[in-house]
Image (cartoon, rainbow, N blue to C red; front, side):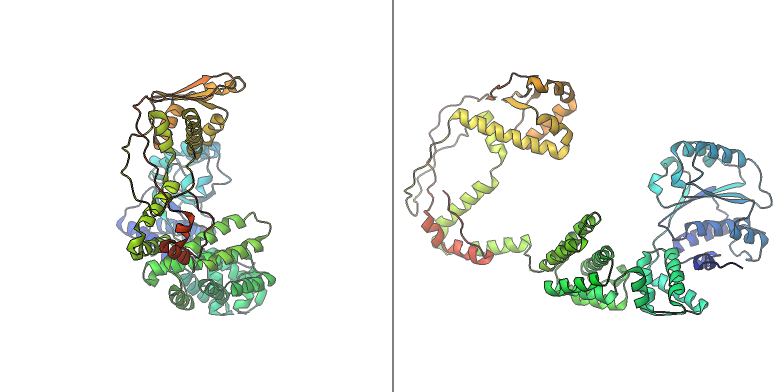
Length: 578
């Protein structure tokens, strides 16, 4: 007799033998006992989790002698035929190779005929998402109202590709990834039945590499038995598949949590020299810090994690070393690196940079800490420095928060009206002369240029396609009634492409976000060298407000608040500007 692989030899033959899918098997069991059997079912889930296996067992329950019933006899000839794939009334179809509309039409004709020897004629279509749209549409009517003797069972790893009209006609069951603990127990039973001695650590390594797929785990065990014989240790698993030992992952994660860059890079060097898969190493690190984040957020709820006892102990220890913010920063670093690692030529260099950034996450201050320190500095400043604080705050606010909208509104509606403030006693007089303000035409051109740049940037974030047209254009005129955009003769062919209502709406919306509202957007052809124009609403002349008096550079450098800020942020004064 030819050799049968473990995945086939130990394939479940009854619902109670299926591992980790109790929510599916219990529902089907109850449906059979209550006689509530639908005409179509679809089983969705990752590979190797039992979709086709459950469909076969369900077919046995329906077509067994005296069925439908759950407790069928394994020696029943009908059940044996189904298990061996030679039943005339249970047809398994590969959706990937039988996906044309002609083949579905043949199926529609075949369903009209009664079953040969069983109660139902059952069609199991694997990878049903591979059917073409035309094939799905050809199947719709038959699927909605099949003959009483026909049952459909579909299996797919990608339910999103199945037409909603197909899904709505089926009872859907979503199979889950099988937890590592259940895979370990099942593999241990198989190893014992095969007379193989295997370390528990090796079983855990196989379960981790299987990623929730029982069939993958069984195939790996089969391969290891061929490689190692009747005794398997963890080192054999790691050497054969290029995996990293769990204690090495935990040691590397521990170095990152402690901010020990030297140790982390040294461990990476050792793993790289031993030929470990760096992509898999990064994935293991990402999964470990994900577990750490879940552990912290859930306040130590281990039921949410699929980890061994040594891993749980490591999570408890590392949770005290890092804040949740630091853990999320590490996850951001590793997630970004994992995406970039796929196409990287020097994977090791990229991973070394990621480890360096991750190890620094512990000492990085978050924004809440920075703000609390600034508030503490402000509250602890001496009363005598009130004027300096006011001047510093005003300068920082003016330089950092002045939006483009202010200059844009000023260009359209004219200078803001404001009364001249009362004279304020300055702590010191400045000897530097204020620069003359730019003239109206210079200011208007500058404001329109800034507004145009901001508008291009805002539009580009929504639709780069429209921005690519606007780059060829020039702002011609800005008023409260209209924003006129012009194209020179060499770019005139773009006019009919961009002058459509949806682009008008987009530009008006983005201008409004910048702080200016116009009644309409106009696109027109212009001559080369046309100068921009801004219509200013005339207003009464107002006396210019007195410019605020700012302390001298020496005053800034000697101010106690500035000194405290430099101490907190470990900085130096690069330049003092008026």
